[in-house]
Each structure stands twice: as C-alpha cells, then as structure tokens.
Amino acid sequence: MSERKKRILITNDDGFEADGLHALRDALADLGEVITVAPTLEKSASGHSLTLTRPLRFVELEENFYKLDDGTPTDCVFLALNKLFADRPPDLIVSGINRGGNMGEDITYSGTAAAAMEGVLQGVPSMAVSQVCRSHCDELPGLGYRLAKQAVHDLAAKILEGGFPLPERKFLNVNIPPIAPEECKGWKITHAGRRLYGNDAQVHINPRGQEYYWIGLPRLDWHPHPHSKHDWSDFEAVRENYVSLTPIQLDMTAYEELECLKGWIQ
Image 1 (cartoon, rainbow, N blue to C red):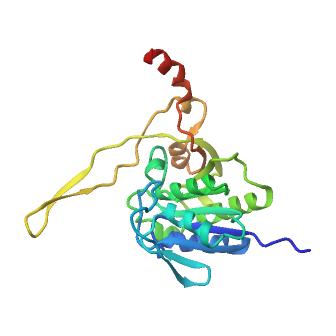
Image 2: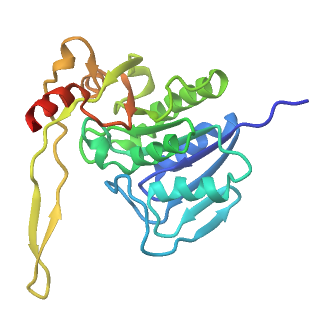
C-alpha cells in the first residue's frame, strides 16, 4: 500500500496575486499537493480577525487555487479546513511569503502570523514565513525570494518527513534576511525581540477639503531585550544574515506576574 500524498494548505495576507504567495507555491510544489486559499484583497496588519458580519465566498481560479472574496487570512484557514479538508486535515499550513518582516511585537499585528495561529488552534502544524526588507521592499525583485523559497522548502520537508518540532498551540515564525542565498550564514533559533515603535500618521486633505490620515510604516528598529544576553532575538539574527526561526505560543499569560497580582488585589 503506497504512502498517502502529503497535503499542504498555503495562504497569505498580501492577497492572491502577491509574488510571495506564488513563490511559496513554487517552493513547495514537489513536496505534495499544494492547495492555496488567499484573500482577494491585501489584508496586511489584519491580525487574528474573523469575518462575522457578512458572508464569504470561495472563488476557484484554477485547480487547487482559490481566493476568498474579501476574507482575512484567518478566514482563509478556518473555512479551508471546513470546506476543502473536511475529509482529513492538511499535513502542514504555511502562511506567506510575506512582503516585509514580522518580528517582535509585529507578530500581533500580522495577518501572516495570524493564519499560522489559526492553523495550530485547529490542530494543524503551521508556520509563518516573512521576507524582511531593508526599505519598502524595493530590493525584492532582484532577490526573487530565492533564499525564502530555499528556506521554506527545507523546513517544510523536514516537518513532513520527521514531524512538527513544537507541541500543540505553538507555531513557527520564520524571518528571512534580505540577501542572496549564498550570503546566508545559516539558521538561528531566536526569541521575539522588542520593536521600537513610532507614531507616524500622515495628515492630508482630500479634494473636498476633508482631512484624512494615512498610517505610515515604522523604521525597523528595536530595543535591547533582557533575553538577548543569552540568546539571539529575531532582529539580531536577520541583521547578521541568519534566517530567524522563532517558536510562538498562543498563551500570552504573564505567569511570572500571577503571584504579584494576587498580592496586589488583596
């Protein structure tokens, strides 16, 4: 009896036409049956959001490739598991390849990370993959996602062959430095760093004289982190030309503060 073919669900938050999504499809094509369900529109920074106030519709573009009409990345995973994998769940969910990094607290904003979060909530091994940019991702056409494709292929193959390395409700967050494959120094297991945030919101006036705001992109800066004395953060690894691999857990309880809070409330 032959071994069953592996099934991989992929999605993203940049939309179904994004170059990174198609690079991901190419990277995983030889590992099994790749089924794509992606948002119709860009859903960057949508976080772990489900659409509850309107119906959603699968639009089949070609075999094993669907866009979810105005859905979020979380919608894509949730509904794909319900509709397309009702017989058996996928062996792996991969979200990406995101255009831009998802490091530090950006993970909480990220639709890319949220899709992997939904995957592990549903009991499926999942990872989020992001291509870090130096500035507005202008260098990506020249890089062609080559290092990201190589890294995600190697990781997916390792997972499909040997099993997922993390327990339930934990996913892998992968960030790729903006370099060619031959410049990469290897892998670093990292913790999530501490992003240095600004408050960039540009104000403009539309043709009718009404004021509107456009939230800007923060610089890729970060604070020193107490854990950095012993381990690498995702920011540090990417800066030093390593692929960053961070285990992320969904339980955000600050356990070390429980006793302090008990004393405070008395």
